[in-house]
Length: 243
Image 1 (cartoon, rainbow, N blue to C red):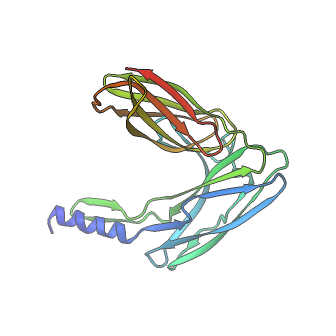
Image 2: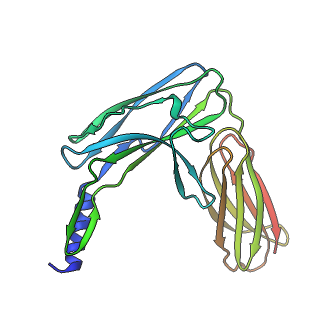
Image 3: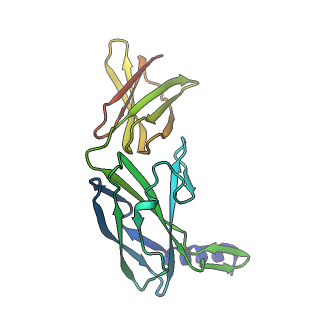
């Protein structure tokens, strides 16, 4: 077997040995003092696979990269209130697993955590000098919004256009997570809209910041760049920069 053929075979094994969870994220809501409960379905293409659950905190840096943190270390950690099975989960096809969250009476805004599902032991295969992990840790984000206590704080803290690239900074100054979308509008000298450029969008946690950037195409007659950031429940943010 050639090294290329071995690599293709190993990648095929990795795809065939995958795990999954549905839904892919939990977005919960509950009143102060309430108990919220539900379930997820965990599935595997490998009979007898074992996953070890673990709770963790997490953060997104300004570039949108995921950072895992020790359980309970975040100021808005949901870990102390989240109950998820602690024992290893053995799968044969799929399995429904139940969770619950007890909301303290003094809770305000939104809180978040993650359930990590780690293969045990970590499966791998080797051939022709290659080694490939057959399954990765599953990341299940969990969000809880406390009913009637949210204060959205979407902010656009800066925009600049330099060397043919636009850069915008989005911040969350409120106490609840937001799902935002951003776009850049290219305007002519008379205010006419010449082009609309997507800048992306994602979740932004309370106290978080995101840096958005992209190259600007050449647009004849362009005079102004207007950045617009929107999120459900929050006031839209607008920033204009002259060219």
